[in-house]
Length: 76
Image 1 (spheres, rainbow, N blue to C red):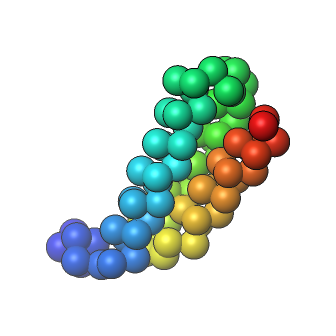
Image 2: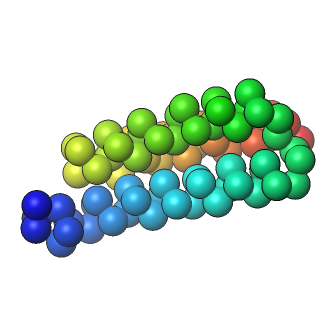
């Protein structure tokens, strides 16, 4: 477990997850996204972050964040 704490890729995956969560929060609070869009963004982001931590790679979390950005851009 200590190797997960000191792994930079795990921290980067978590940071990308937080960034995606902030983007989803902003979309929801400003009223840009309706509930189905928010749930779709969470469906992409959460498994991506979990897989990124499990695989010790930031790429699945980056793909989840990219999905959130695509959803956000499709709404504006």
